[in-house]
Length: 208
Length: 247
Image (cartoon, each protein chain N blue to C red):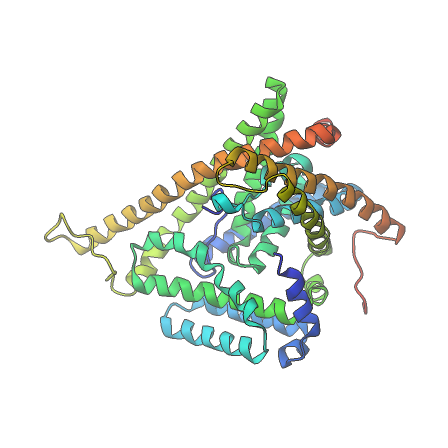
C-alpha cells in the first residue's frame, strides 16, 4: 500500500500509448481480461493471455519495482492448491489465472490516474458508492502520513520484537488506536469542509 | 499466516460462475435494501467516517507485523465504530480496493463482502451484548472478536465447499495425474469411487490447514482488537458510547 503514491505518480507522469488511452477503454480491457480468466481453462490460452499482459507491461515501460506487485497474490494462491492434491496442471492453471488478474490490475492502476477511474466508474455504479471509494482513496493518503509519524514513535517505544511479543502487540495496537482516533478527527474536519464547499452526496470531478 | 482466514484469497476464475455471481447478486441486493431504507442525510454525514474506517482497514491489511508475519483486518473494530449498515458498504469498498492490489480476485468481491460483513456485523452485535452483560470492556471485546471471526471463517469454508465439484472438474481435466500419488493402501479400486474419496479428502485437507491457522488468527486479532478498543476507550470513550447510544 505504501507503493500507492508511486503508482499514482507513474499513472500521471507516464507517456506510453496505454497512458494516453481513455480510462473507459482500459476498464473495458480489464473486463475482457477478467472474462478470459474466468472462461479459459487450458494452459495454452492462459499462457497466451499472461504473455500479452506481460508484453503490455514492458511496452508501457513500467518499472520492475512495480512488477513485484503482480507476484504478491501468489502468496494467497498457495493455500488453495492444497485442495487440488498437488496436481501440477491445476497449480499452473491457478497461478496463471492469478498472475493474469494481478498484472491486468497493476497495468490499469499504473497507467490510469485514480480520478479518471472514478469518473468512468461513476457512469456505471451508484454515485454514493463511487463517492465512498473516492473518500477511502483520499483517506489512505491522509492515514499514510499519520502512519509514517506513528512509526517513529513506535520505534522509540521498542517497535516490534520477537523476544517481546506482548510489548510488540501493545505497541502495534496503540499505533492502530492512534491511527483510528486521528482518522476519525480528520473525517469530521473533512465532512465540515465538504459541506462548506456544497457537497450533496456526490463528488463532481473536474471536466464534468 | 497472513490473515485471520476469513477473507477468501481466491483468484479469479477458480470459483464456479454461479457461486461468485450469486455472491455479487446477494451483496448488491443487500446494499440496495440498506440504501433504500437509510436516511440520505445521515449517510452523507457518515461518508467521510466510512471512507476513513475503510482506509484504516486497507492499511491494516497492508501493514505486516514482521515478527509474527501477520496482518490485521480490523473488521470488528470498524463494525463497532460504524454500526451494522455502514460496515456493509465499508466492506464493499475495502474489498474493491484490496482486489485492485491482489488481495483476492475481482470476481469474488461479492462473496468477500458477504463473509467479511458477517464478521463486522456479528462483532458489533456480540460486543454490544457482551459489554451490556459483563460491563467490562476487555472480555467483551475479546469474546466478540473471537466469535465473529470464528463464524465468518466457517462461512468462508462453507463458500469454498460449495465449489468442490467445480474444483474436481478443473483438477480432473488433466486426467487426474498429480505430482504425488496417494495409493498406499489400495491396490485396485473403482476410479469413480477413488475420485470421489480424493475430492472429499482434499477439501478436508483444506479445512485442516485453514482451521488451525484461523484459530491463531482469531486469538491474535482478538488481542489486538481488545487492546485497540482499550486505547480508544481511554482517550475517546465517546466514540464507543456513541454507537451504543445510537442503537
